[in-house]
Length: 145
Ligand SMILES: [Zn+2]
Ligand SMILES: [Zn+2]
Image 1: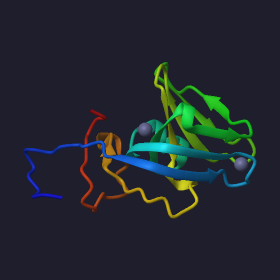
Image 2: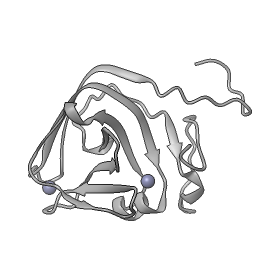
Image 3: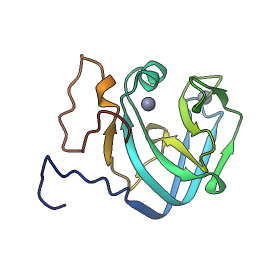
Image 4: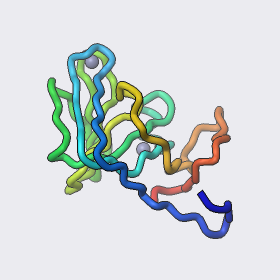
């Protein structure tokens, strides 16, 4: 891990190779698997993720060609930069898809464990709610990058 220096914070975007991730929404109407490489597990504290999830939202990026989805998520574009996929029956917020991005963020909370993953960053912490503190040692970024 190395020492902790507040002036030099690096975000290695660790690649988790050869993962086999499997998950579903709460009601089971939508299931998915992803294999290959999972990267950059983050917890997002932005206002949009907080509104949609009810708290903050954690996801990991997988390549689209490695992601297989069964069922039909409903997609909602909260901005012109990305759309968000959720189950129309139970409301589980499952996917985040940036425009033009060859990968998709899949909800860590929807995965059936063990995942073998660990959060690398808290992002958009400037937008976090005032009703909780982030007390772990995972690096924090006020904005995404
Ligand atoms: Zn569902
Ligand atoms: Zn967010």
